[in-house]
Length: 333
Image (cartoon, rainbow, N blue to C red; front, side, top):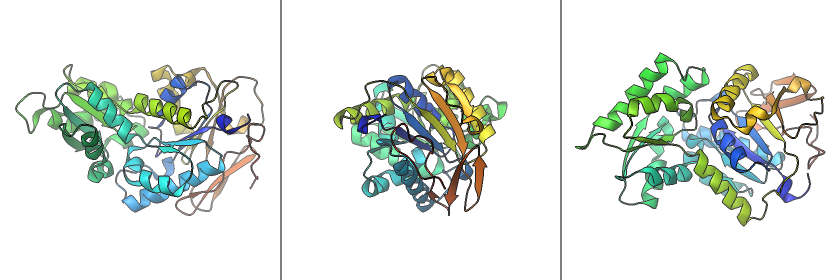
């Protein structure tokens, strides 16, 4: 790969939830290469203080900068709500969040201008969705519900469990029944966390047929397309590279990534899923996925012939190695 257009798109989330956005990006932009980073070692972000999340997001942005990404999607609603404007000011790479695209999707879906937002504690506390929705439509009625149990359930692989259904019912039913005369009180539920689409079946079951359930994945991918076009860095075609990285256990991340791929019937399912141990094997397939892990603090784990480390609390210091023939050679630690 050569030139600005051939550089990859970076996608960042606190865990596996952002894979739902990545899936849609790959569907809408099949000629683009991607690098995904899930910060599983420090998830969930929702209960944390804003300054912590800003620090984690800065670290991720430095990591993506070393990977020479042409654009970064912060596919984490919590990070978008408290860190997007900060990192946009501090880093030159175009950066897109998921809150405004999600708000646009909800307003397109609602018939009565009555939107309920399911989100993390910090996203609700930030008021980011209320501001985004009312910026786009000042007359919209917005109700928010913090859902602290949902992300851990998804990350533990319990999205289809009775426990998950009980938690969804606890959070969704008040939005349908409290604070209004018409039932259901809201006619649209906005999934304000990229983990929540993995609970869509349970949410739709509790919400019922009269309530539309939307998320930000499709509209975020559309926003990416527009930004790439405006900067004239849309890739025309050729071989693509897709790399997945996580800061937590690789096996769990791989299992959930495969579940998301199967559920969405995305292009991920047609790619050859390779662990880092086999990275020396240079496959000829048009798309390859490398799933690698970074560890926290000063410790390092050697995976295959590559190292990835986090220095301190928020500094991802080693970008994806081995992409030299694509666009840049990175120094090995």
